[in-house]
Length: 138
Image (cartoon, rainbow, N blue to C red; front, top):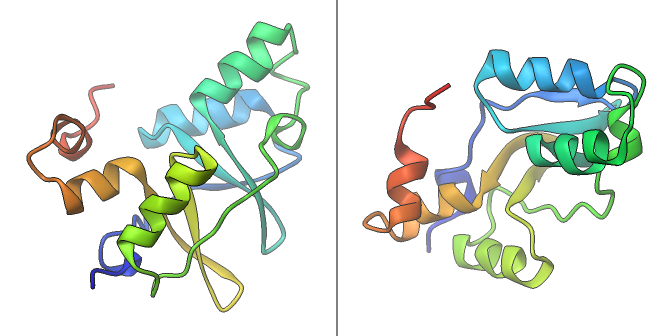
């Protein structure tokens, strides 16, 4: 059995729910990533992606300098443990139609597993795995 902890991403960025969309977009640009984990203290309250900023923020005419991550984040966070089976994690993604799962250990955020991570691990010859394994191009 391959566990989530064997291939999860541990280089992740967290931001507070009170941070603005502008701050998150700048952090994503500077870190060459497409998402941030939104927290309230040690609690994970959601994930915001670059697409969320575009669709739930800018396209809804929200001011990115005043709108907070907490206002647009998806709050139904599905999490996994680093000891969970990778296939079970993929099933959760399919069931809940999500592309990323925060990895929690003893109530603490320790990583993030994405659909791309699963593709690289489970189907290394797939197009998604090939794209996911490449260096960012921005």
